[in-house]
Length: 225
Image 1 (cartoon, rainbow, N blue to C red):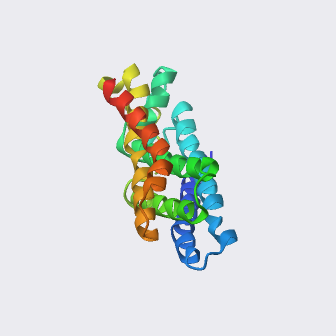
Image 2: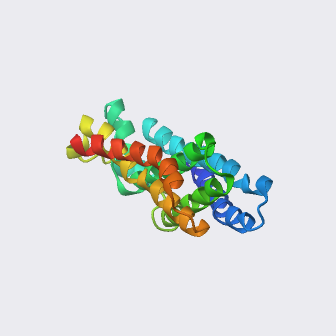
Image 3: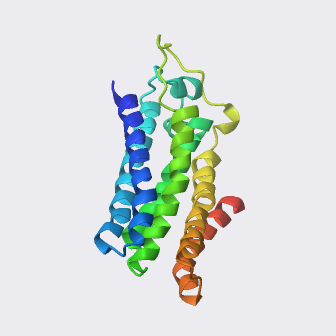
């Protein structure tokens, strides 16, 4: 019923949170206000929650074959096997962009949740830069390729997913590649954060290493496939 609208709204809220996350930490890092620097952490986790809800909404629309949504109509069919109903979510431009930004938010959320060994201001800067990238993708999706667009007179049946994409490879390969590709955004965020702080040293290399390794492993697995 209202799942598409809820998914769209969650995406707008994620954009709002990303805008806060991309500005507040950088402004307050100048004031060395620890409490306000922690805004980066809570907004990163909230942003992940909302974009995950948005992605879950799109998956639900595909699984239930809701053909009143353009994205489902163009890439699904009610008789398609369940696994391809799910993989069809990212077997198209709009859906794969939503997966892309979900993984961007996931890496920000992981740093927010598990980056407790990082200096407070470095973590705040990393999460702010990560939110710059996410903001660009949220705007791109919402303004040019919204996966929740409705059709005025819903058709009875969908057009089906390109048969070439109805392969088990689509279930594993793109998400794996994206975890690698998009995962490297966190290395970029660490680098820019260090430049903003004017400090790149051995300690910084030690902090960024596990995150870079994680992305590298995923990318290697994706390419190996």
